[in-house]
Image (cartoon, rainbow over all chains, first blue to last red; front, side, top):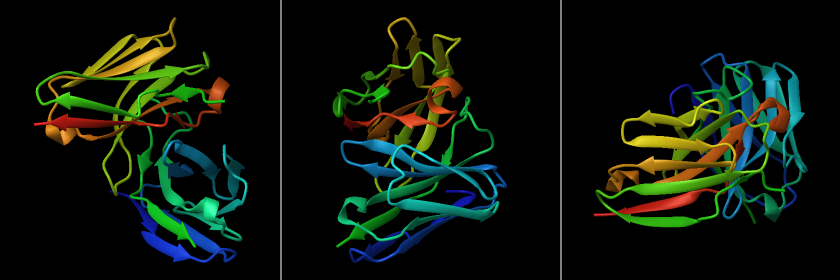
Length: 115
Length: 114
């Protein structure tokens, strides 16, 4: 996806270990988001950022933390991974807060498996 | 409490026919509605949107209809093509309801058969 990169693309980790997922953008967009996708639940917002060092919680933020020290990078950390956090994680970016007629641009996702 | 609902997990359509994907919402404060398309192992991609002040928006083979009184929107794909086979997510946003962030439905998997 042009302008937005997620790393790693796949990760397997053990229960109780810390995990950090990275989202990098080259679009200089102010807003960045982390969503998770699970069968039967669609896409749910974990955390979002509206500027450097400005972040807020989304719908399913428990067990997750985020950091944004630079405009281009938004990190999602699972402090102590649990099996319920096995999911596909998507990062998204947008120029404006409210999605108007062009919405968000999503990355390709990170598939995380916690064993 | 689910604010954006896609009650059909899947839909199968013959190539060349119309595909109609439905979405319901509960929050009258939403002011934009969007459809995203997602292929396996890829991120969702924006397809089409509609403002709450309109009742129809068309882009090529894709048309979105909004019925505010019923809190219902639908995506029509005409004619359907095998390449349209994907998961379609309905999403909504509005400062009153979601602080401007997109809220997604659970998705509908569309299969277009040749």
